[in-house]
Structure formats: C-alpha cells, structure tokens
Image (cartoon, rainbow, N blue to C red; front, top):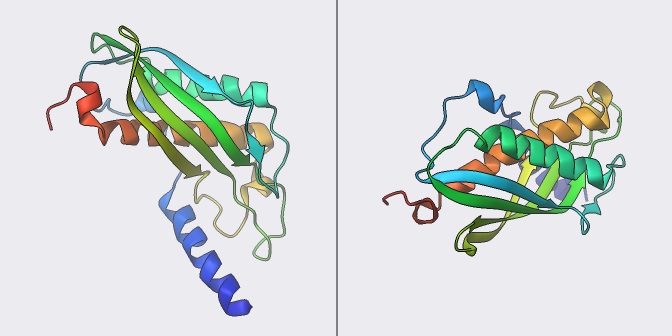
Length: 179
C-alpha cells in the first residue's frame, strides 16, 4: 500500500513543480496568435464538480474570474478575425488548510476548451480538456495555509488562461498561422 501511495504522489509532486503560477499577462510579451481577435470569452460553470478535499467555490465567481483572466490575456490581440474562447468548467479543487509536510492539498482546475470564429460561427478547435495546478510556490506547504479561496481561484484562472494560449498555439491552422 505504501508503494502505491508513493507512486501516485511522485507525478503529482512533479506536476506541481512544473506548473508555476503564470505571471500577469499584461507584463509578458504577446505571442503570435495570427489573425486572432477576442470577441468575448464564454465560460460555463453549471456542470462543475468540486473535487474533495476542497473549499467551496461559488460558480458565479468562477465564471467572472475566468472571463476576466481570459480577457486580460487575450484582449490585447487585434488580428482582425473575431473569435470566441469557450470554456466549460469541468472540475476544481481549492486547497483547504492542511498540515504542513504531512497533508498539503493542492488546488487544481479542469476545463474543456473550444475555439470558435464569430462570422461565420464555426468551431475551429476543440474540444480539448485542459488541466492546471495552482503552482509550486508551496511544494510542502499547501496553498490553503497561505491563500484564501479567492486568491487560489484567481491564480488557477490565470494559469488556465495561459494554458489555453498554449493550446491555441498548438492549433496554428485555427488561427491562420502557417504551419
């Protein structure tokens, strides 16, 4: 049983190390997204599942925070062709306070992403399930001890917006980029 637990925890720890919190998109250099121009982000939260152990996360707040972070990351692009980024919030866990080193739950966010052109309305990429963690700023001390649920939600939404950008760049044909 201990061997199984160690095997399961190894990838989670490595995933936490690899997924540092995304910086503010307004301070980063904009990557090439071809003809992309955001009309509006669409975030659906009604089917979201809270994965224990987790603090409660208000679904209306999730929607607002995710739309805000998508707008911050993608609102500066003026490629000339209007797109919608549509996300369905599949699941989340906002880390509750734990016991340092012994029990340090991590926050996680899972969405299904789609990319649509506005005119004509056509899905050009997706569905794609994306997962992000809050980050490795507290590998042995869970963020539940250091941040409240609102701060965890903001960090997860910002990390997810960056993850969506990476997914879009892996679909250059959808953005009019040459491959």
